[in-house]
Image (cartoon, rainbow, N blue to C red; front, side, top):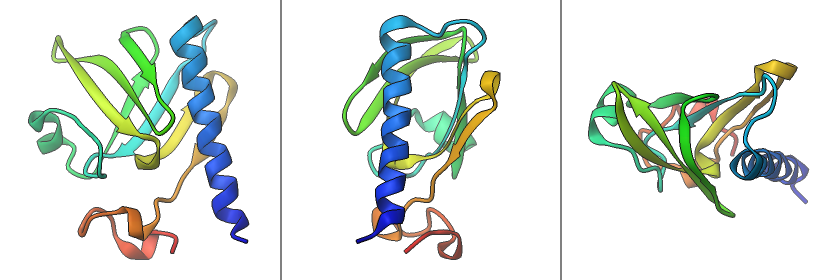
Length: 129
């Protein structure tokens, strides 16, 4: 039994639930999320100009200016503004490498599995097998 993988799946479930609450109820008080993800992970969808700028990973902030947050079982979608242009992002939870809510000093780190990554996405010595 791989308890490490079970724990990581449970923590990703916590991220999913936090995003579901934000999608239905909004973010109360000072809550806001920093979400870092691998931009070249399978299933990530973002415009080419963002992929060119963030070729490995990207951190987004969900605080005041985000729209249409939709949360699925395995991914989420959100619209953000980049250079005053509304942009839709599609992010699988498996692509997320960190999640934080600085308002309550809460944070999680994730390690993607090698078998989930295309060649050249991340240095393999940093990835859990």
